Length: 195
Image 1: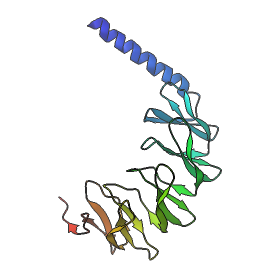
Image 2 (image 1 turned 90 degrees about the horizontal axis):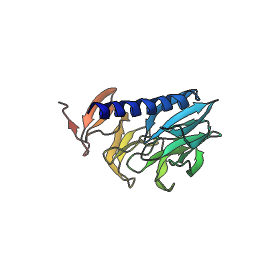
Image 3 (image 1 turned 135 degrees about the vertical axis):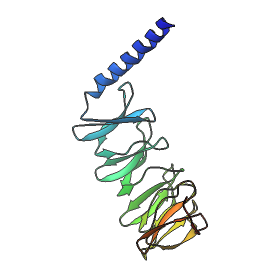
Image 4 (image 1 turned 180 degrees about the horizontal axis):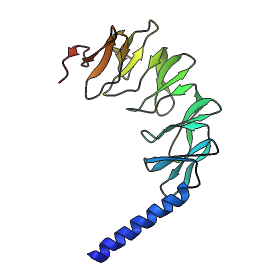
């Protein structure tokens, strides 16, 4: 048993030592996410495996960690998405993007926000002045009057636009602001008491 434990410790130590060696090559190393670490060198970003193998080349001006096996990358002032093999499956073309959540990502060109799917298809048109990611099947969005409400994945309004601000749902509870005060609501838009 002691020999087995010693062997496990030696292997773990050697893996850690190898990781430390490649990590020294970079100006910045973020924690591994989905088996890949976000790295930066000479102002450029990419992703490497835990063993230091480059999977997404360090050619990007910025990057956001992987979510749902997709990472947002910035190239020449435009955002797009890459997969774990470094393939740009959505070419950089957006002014701003959020990570994929529940199969959709918030994107914007100019001043309007919409949602794309993992193939890059615009599934909810850019009809909103602001938006947040989907959570619990709904997303908070802001209309042209500056009021927030919630939509479903088809873009259908499910909670009316009547809030100063609306945050993403968590465990079927949404947080909304009315007259600079925060309230909790359910998915029917009814106010609920928080426990």
